[in-house]
Length: 447
Image (tube, rainbow, N blue to C red; front, side, top):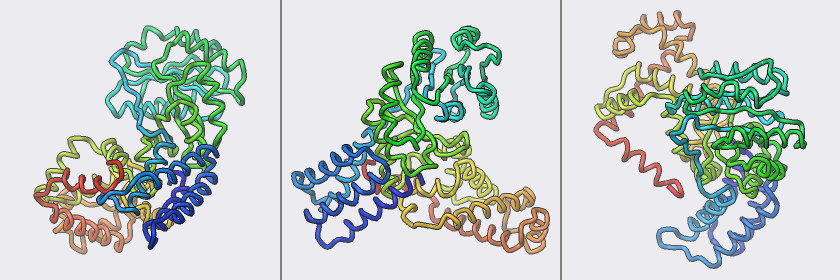
């Protein structure tokens, strides 16, 4: 989980509110002290922490709870809203205009993850039916252009590079006539070990010539509060329009980067949460706080699901649900889609209430391994068996076990899981999936 320690601490703190006999000023003082400790440990700016907790105290004194939101829920609501305000309040998306190409230039220090982030952005926009190309203008880091080419090939987009040229402006002009064939051009620029004048001059000259539509500062979460200084200087140099925080899955200090970015004047647009091209999330403060507090993030879950399964298959599955029809092929496609969505632990933190179960990571890893073996077993069944699982007897099961190398006991578990899933689907027969989903959304603050 992103900011795992902070999330666990905040959930534990709010649990005291929901279980308290009396919700009074004393409880609020204890609550704010624990919130202060949690946020400071996550490297959040000290002044911002004190402002947040003072706002919680003031609002609890001055505002009155309603019948719909008694004192406990009222206090939790205040905490939720103030944390959301701290992290930027509203979601701010990049709006791609029809002009060709829409230019997005990435800037940042050496080692911030610009090149790999370009691959994630290329994958993100390609899945949204945009024709994407990348441009390598990092002429200083050895193999930077070669790395960009490899990453671009991996996600299947055009990459413009010149291995011999040392002048980034000349590289940009060399391919200028071809850019109009693409909806989006993602531009990789050089970084440095520190914010030196040489880097600033280069960024300023590129910005003046290219005139990008978006100028995104890429900052690793581990830098914490030093983000503010970087964001301020890069903003002066090229008027950055947004921030991407990388390596969110690898540090407990990401709160510093998130909060410092907020006070720099630039909005966070994306987070990277892993190494895969798909490990990129749009940053939505209300939903992010909802996830921190263990309330899930259905919007992110649905977004991942839409990327993993085509609209045609999604409608087909919805039709099957309404008709109460479900076979092993459907189960197989669901499992494939889940593997594309990411690890089970990442998926579970998006489901309302699931992150509060505190399932051990070892257990989740075991489940992921089991899903992989189940896919191997399904590959060993015939099309007829997949379409009509009821015909699978002990001899067919034994054949599939030997063919896949998966123990017979696990193949039985797979069939048992299928029967349970089919039984659940039959209970949903004739019901509107949208209405079922709205019941979940109603449990999440702000949705």
